[in-house]
Amino acid sequence: MTRYYSSTEVVALIDDLTEPRLTAYLRASIVQPVATPDGPGFRETDVARLQLLCDLDENYALPEESLKMVMGLIDQLNAMRGDMRALLRAVASEPDEVRCRIHSSIRVLRG
Amino acid sequence: MAGDPYAALGVKKTATEAELKAAYRKIAKVDHPDLNPDPAAAERFKAAAAAYDLLKDPEQRRRFDAGEIDEQGQERPQRRYYRDHAEAADNPYARSYGFENDADMGDVFSDLFGRRGAGGRAGTGGGGFEGFEGFGQGGQQRDFHMRGQDHRFTLEVDFLTAVRGGKTRITLPDGSDLEVTIPKGAQDGQTIRLKEKGGAGLGKGGSGDAYLTLTVAPDPLFRREGDDIFLTLPITLAEAVLGGKVATPTIDGPVNLTIPKGATTGQKLRLRGRGIKGGDQQVELKIVMPPKVDPELETFMESWRKSHDYDPRVGMNSGSRS
Image (cartoon, rainbow over all chains, first blue to last red; front, side, top):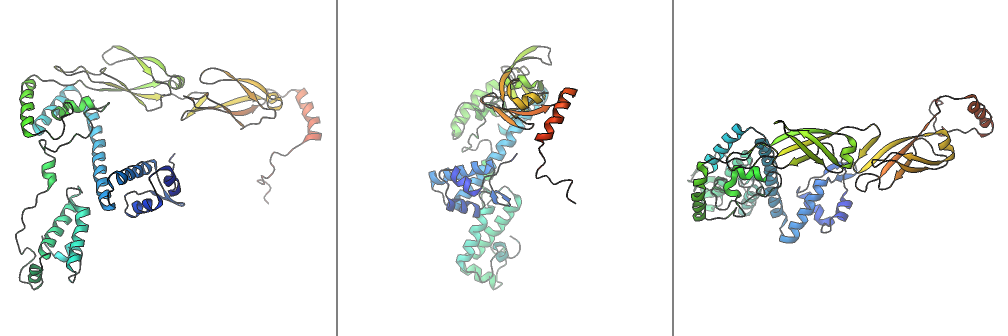
């Protein structure tokens, strides 16, 4: 069951989020809510992302374009972390022999 | 660069210097290879950078427009991309990305990438320190240490054990027996980690972990939604008409539930705090007829109906739509 928040709801939910700020994020496609018949529907992910955006905005006073770039890097890093976690988990469940080989390869590649 | 430098920047031949610069900036923001991992973006960026390099100098631009030089009119200075350096293991700016102290995967990570995993030293250690650490590690690497294998199992638990929490015993593949504590309110698909109950390590490496993924068996009486418990409670005709207290099963044993007078099938009552961890139990009533309609009930209904008949289907025009 996916719950969508409306624009009004997210603005009410996040202290630092104002209507103009939200409009700017949407226009810059930094947040991409789901299109619903009642307008944009924000998922839990979108709400958390908006919170982070507001924090970055407040703490670093980043202009919109810088903010977009920083978020791009954060997204890349987090996607990589997720993949890395899956990979670590998969490796950890392999038998000793396989893990020994992986272990040695990494030592060779990464010193 | 191959092709039209104006096209690479997406501008007209008549573009002003400011327009050229703006067009280049716009592409650089989106397609810079250090920011955008897509190879196509890197190509677009390279083409735009070369084009801008050629056209930003008015004299060169004039000569290009006049056909005096081609689009490769000059040798571009080699451009460096940070990414080519940044991924290297010995990049002095390398920063930890959060796995060293990860509750779940920290040991696995250190085992594989331990060089950077040691303490809080990840990050900007200078070359000198790297060498120093390397020296210490060289000795260790002669005898091989490796953490043991993680083992993964699924464990089926019954509904009430999952909801109430409890202990269960499992037998590991090596034949050993282990007591497992199921946390209160455990969910279907939840994973329990048993630290160091996996395979043995090599050398000084610690044991791996065991992970149990829970499958919660359905219950004939109870259903769960989040922390709320749902139950359908059958009541007699008399209990429905007259109301009264009825012993109702909950996950922590029976509780007396007050049925209001005139209760009906589908009516929902709430037992506050009788769900999981402060959740509620919702009881849906269901009127059940006696196993046999005896003559006494039949006679009573015959006479009752004469003076008290009612239509529960008011507003339902199905069947009489013609």
